Amino acid sequence: MNSASIAAVKKLLSVPQKIVIVPHKNPDGDAIGSTLALWHYLSNLGQKAVIISPNDYPKFLKWLPGNAHILNFERENSQAKEAIENATVVFTLDFNHLGRIGQMHAVLEEKEATFVMIDHHQAPSDYAEIMYSDVLMSSTCEMVYNFIEFLGDTSKITPEIANCLYTGIMTDTGSFKFSSTTSRTHKVVAELIEKGAENTKIHNHIYDTNSPSRLHLLGCALKNMVILTAYRTAYITLTQEELDTYDYQKGDTEGFVNYGLTIENIRFAVIFIENREEGIIKISFRSEGDFSVNEFARNHFDGGGHNNAAGGKSDTNMKETTAHFVSLLEHYKDKLMA
Image 1 (cartoon, one colour):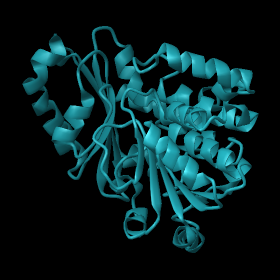
Image 2 (cartoon, helix red, strand yellow):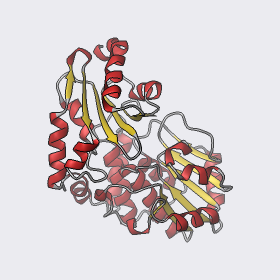
Image 3 (cartoon, helix red, strand yellow):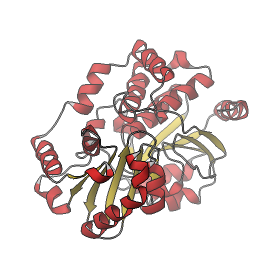
Image 4 (cartoon, helix red, strand yellow):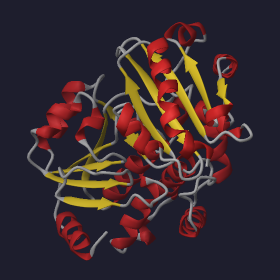
């Protein structure tokens, strides 16, 4: 974050503002953790702030401090729209294009306010007046820690803020195993633990609490896995019927895609999940090494993200989508086999 942006934020927050904080649609641990941490920080400064999530998010994140104050744009539409209408400042976290917020897109696109973006994804759009964009960062939560540090306020990081930030960093780094995890990341995490982050409790909430139906769904997903050794690729499919059979709840498939990368010599893993309500196949891509799933998702599946973790979608059915995916692999064989 450059000095001009830091000065602009300080000036912005030097007077009372009505602030709306927005994560992306289908928010994950980094999105919810960063927005809640920022909400706590701004509220403690005396600012009037509200978080509006485009839709619901997984149950395993709803223990986070401040969760009860998050408005759901789909369920609490009139209240959310009123907050947006009155807002003088809009913080957008963990996304860099307004197309990532679903139905809220139309509302925020017309909103006249000062927009502040904090995000670590590639190819940011230019809707924000103040941008803190860094694709080398492990997570938006690490960036929010930096943001608070830039403002000279790390002494104001409470245990509540520390728990929220630790959650997002942990989940977006795959428990600190992804290549985006740096020595700086570990220093930030150590500081968060010093300030009250309960690392063992957080890990248990996120990873060690399963319902029987989720474990059965995982069994179904692993049974459906297809391994293409000629392309060092593994993919999983889950149909709407299978999701319904195992009483799918939002967040139940979190982390399933990573199982493909645990297989020896596999460097590209994908999961295709049917969403009949939206009429799409939702896709998550993961890779190891220098194979860019961000590029792959952008070029072929209307998506994007990071070099080793990205998302996309398909408007065709599961059979056609997976057939198209497999047909593409021949064009990437040299990169996948390198």
